[in-house]
Image (tube, rainbow, N blue to C red; front, side, top):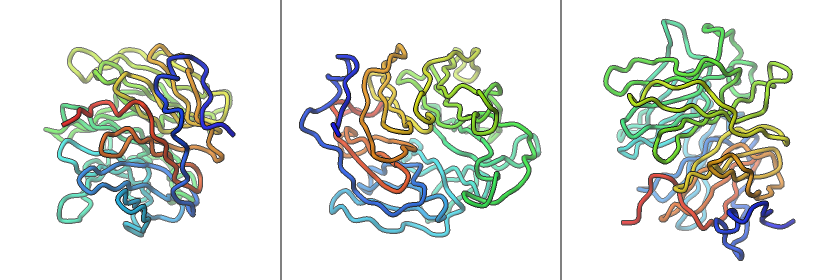
Length: 305
C-alpha cells in the first residue's frame, strides 16, 4: 500500500515523498479527539468506549493512560492560554482542564435543557468556543449512557467567552460532527454524519460564511461529499487545505472543494490533528490505533518563532 495517492498536483506540494506513515500505538476500542499540547510535547487522545484519555510523549515515544475514568471524552482542542478544552459524553458538557488539574464545566445546557453529548470543538481567535452536539454519547452505553435528548435536535453552538451564554449557530444539520474554521476565520466547516440516524442524509462537509460580527453565519453550502464512510473529524492547514477522516484514508481537499489527495490508512479513520514543534506532523486516530505522518505543510494559526 502506497503512503500517498496524488489526485491533483497541488497535493504533491503538500507531502514529503520519503516520509512514511507510522503506527505509533494500538490498543483502543475507538480512538478519537487528538489534541497536541506544545508545552508538554505530548498528544492526548480519547479511547471513548474504554472511558480513558491516552498520552503519547514525542520525546521518547511512550504511551500511557493520562486519565481514567474521564467522562467518556470525545473531541479536544486548546484555548489561547494552552488549556485543553474537552467534549464530554458522560458529563454532557464542554469542560476545561485548569492548571490545578481539575476539569471545570464551561457549558452544560441550552435554553435550560441538558446538552446531548458534545462531540468536537474549536476555539476562535476571539476566545469563543464553538462545538457540535450530536447524540452519539446518549444513543447507548458504548460511548456514554443512554438517555433521551432533552433538546430534541442536534445543533452547533457558540459559547461566548464574556457572558458564558451558549447560542445555537447552526440548526440545519442532522448530526453535526467535526468542525473547523478557515485560516482567516471567515468560513466555518461542519461535517454531518446524519445518515447514522436519517437515511440518505448526505455524507458531507458544509461551509458557513461568518458574518462581519464574527458570530452570525450565512446559509450553509455543500463543500464536499464522502463516498467511503463519513467525514468525522478534520483540521485545516495554513494554506486552507482541509485534512479529513474517512473510512479508508485521510483525505485532503483544496479550499475550492477539490479532493486533491489521500493518505490510505488500514483502519477506519476518526480524526486528525497537527502536532510536533513545527506543527507539520499529522497525528491520526483510527479505530484501534494512533498513526502519524510528516507533511510539507503545517497547522493554521502556527507561526515560526
